Image (cartoon, rainbow, N blue to C red; front, side, top):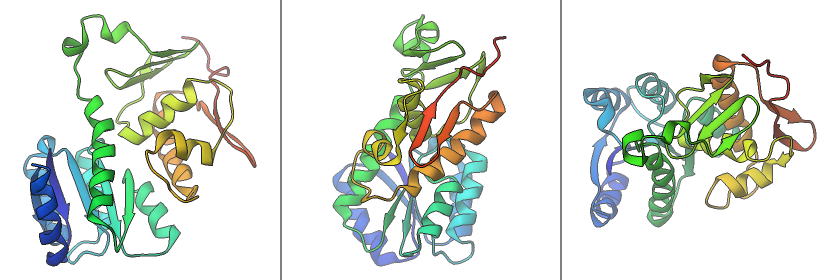
Length: 242
C-alpha cells in the first residue's frame, strides 16, 4: 500500500512511520496543506490511501480534501481531527473523506481503520479481465432499473453508470439495494457498512447518504428515500424504463 500521511505534527508522523514500516507500507509524509496537494498531484493514480489532519498550515484540511477529491474522486481518505465538534466531522465527510479518527488516537486503531477501508477500496481495482470476460454482465444486485457488480465495483441506474463512488458509498448503496424498499435505521447501516463501532454517531450515515445522492442524481432519478424518523430505503419503482 502506498500511503500519504498529511500531518503537521512531526512527532505523530514519526510515531506512525514506525507502525507503517511494520506493516511494510510505502508511507510518505506531508507537513502542510500546499505541500500535500503538490505531492498528491505528482502521481495521482499511485496513491492507495490518504490520512489527513484537519488543522494544517498553508491550506487547511477541508481545502486539501476538496483539492484531492477534484483530482481523484475515489482515493480513500481518512481524516484525523482533534476537533470535538460533530459539525466539523460531518463537514469533513461531506467534503469527500470516507472516514475519520479523532485525536488523540491509538496507532493500532488508525491501522485497523486503514486496513478496513483499504480492503473495500482494493475490491474496486479488479478489471473485467481479472474476474472473467462476462463480469460486466454478471450483476450481484439487479432490480427493474438498477444493476450492481461487486467484482467491478460498478453500479448502473436505468443504463447510466453511477460514477466516482467511494468505497463507503458503494457499500452503502449495495446494502440498501440488496433489500429494495426495506427501511434501514442509521444504527443498522453503521453496523452493516462500517467495520467498527461508531458509538452512535449516526450523522456519519447522513453525510455519506448526501454525497451518494448527489452522484445518483447525475445518472438518473433519486432512488435513496428518507423514511422520516426511521432511516433510509432503496426504491427504484419510480424510475422510468429506458
